[in-house]
Image (cartoon, rainbow, N blue to C red; front, side, top):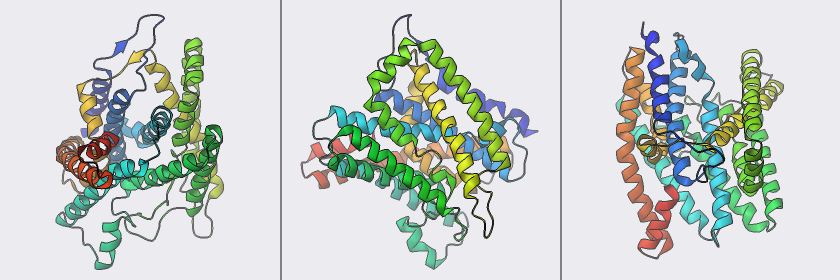
Length: 391
């Protein structure tokens, strides 16, 4: 059966991740472990892992046996958590290292996420209609504007948009950096609580209402975690390096512990423990309070490992360059790819998603450059600034 060959996808991910591994000599550390280049390559790997997570869910929720891919059904939060962590880490590092970083912040940052969002959103809508989706006239405006997500996997950009705005507001008006970190973290916790309170979207056919559903909040806390890590990076890395072996062992053990607790809560309570008249808030909080540390310790383990082992190769660099487009567009093929054999389905989804993400990335880059020139009013310099924010 097809499921007997699912191991090839784990093997492919392992090859992508481990090709070109560069261990350091004893007593030395990788000073570039969290650099932009290293993190982009790692996030490229996370993007294709998220795709496998979504495809595993598609198989599972179709009541088919996912075989060994069952592990991927509930593990996608860890890869999404990496995106949030490095977003927060990168924001604070730029704030710390670049003079007047907040001046022009919105002009540089927002086009780099909004343009890919709307380009991919338009392609998704057109592609869905060509594949047979019967779009109602009353849905068109809400889907085109993104007020309701036709592709609910685009939630990440909507949320990161608000998290960027919040970062700009907090760190612009709260001058003390420690106080700003605290205020930002509290605001994110309140956003998480608000999203949890909203529950799931049961009113739209695509579950596309903003902030409805656990995927909107079960990894969000990693954004301020990344900011806090960058704020005290020297102290944290100093402790990790001083007690490296102990740090790694403890972190791995905590991953295992919180993974087991997360799986138990997902199976016994979970985010969907709700019905009419009972919103299931207690079960949602119980699940979130074990899943969040699970994601945190997975990310921390990766950070610890990369202090001694360099990850990165040309494939990861390539995937990192198109990671956002891959993230935003692959659901089109998950929903409509007409392949019944599941191994073929997964291979076809990967091939089609990458093939489409490449030209979309080129288009996005040109539009971002144009927006940079218009917004900055400084010719090529403005375009370069905006393009760097996307890269």
